Amino acid sequence: MKLASKTPYHCQQACEKEKRCQSFNYVVYREECELNSRTKESRPKDFVSSQERLYMKRYKNRGK
Picture 1: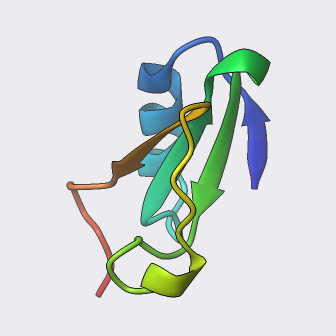
Picture 2 (picture 1 turned 90 degrees about the horizontal axis):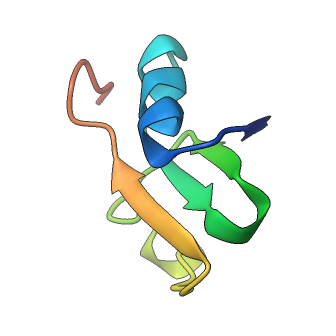
Picture 3 (picture 1 turned 180 degrees about the vertical axis):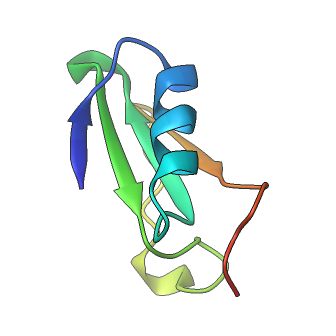
């Protein structure tokens, strides 16, 4: 799910409100948030490192 977001903090808040969100990417140049239903640890082959994105894992109330 993609959302407009001015800061990574707002991405984090959106992720915490979304039950299925396990991690998120903040796309700096687009001021956009990408909510993910998995973490990079659970799907390492899907993770792509990028200088344009900030990856963060949800720490509170994360599903298993």
